[in-house]
Image (cartoon, rainbow, N blue to C red; front, side):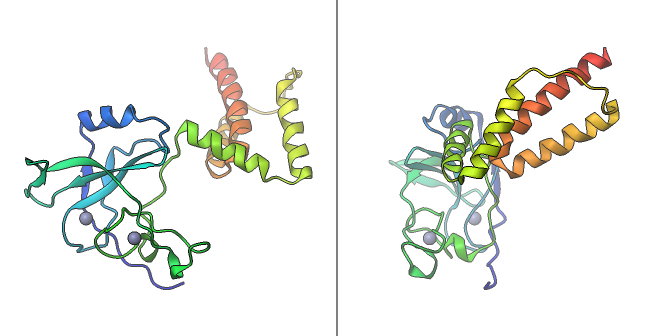
Length: 207
Ligand SMILES: [Zn+2]
Ligand SMILES: [Zn+2]
C-alpha cells in the first residue's frame, strides 16, 4: 500500500435551503451529511467541494469558495452553490475494470480520491440499502441463504417467552446487536427486528 495524501481541512454546514433542495432529489444514495468536509487534496487550488448527494446517476456537489471569496455563476456572485458535476474518469493503476474509481468530479483539483486518505463513508439511504441488501442476498451461496431464511422464519413465528436473561443483560445484548447491525447489512434487518422487540419489552418492564 502506498502512502495516502492528506485531505483538505475545510468544512461547512449545509444551509436550510440546501437541505430542502437535497431532500427532494429522487433516488438518494445516502443520508445527508450536516457538516461536510472538503474532499480535495490538502492545499488544493480553487474552490472546496464535497459530495452533497448522489441522486440516481447524478452527483450533486456542494461547492464553496475559500475565505470570503465569491463564486460567479450565471453572472451572479455567491459564496457557495450546489452543482451537478460529471464523475472523474480516473481509476487506480489506469485499469478501467479493476482498481478503485476516483470518487471526485471530473477536472477536480489535486490528487484523485484513491491517492488520498478516505473522506469517510456516508450512511446509505434506506432505498440504497434495500438495493444493496437485495444484491447481497443474490450473491449468497445456497447454504448461506438457507441459514438466513431459517432465521427469518424463526423470527416470524410466535415463541414462548423464557425467563432467560436479566434486564441489564438484555440492555447489553440490544446495544451489542445494534452495533453489529452497522457492520453487516445482510443481518441488519434481522438484528433490528430483534432489537426493536427487546426494546419494546424492556420499556414495558420499566413502566
Ligand atoms: Zn478544500
Ligand atoms: Zn479524479
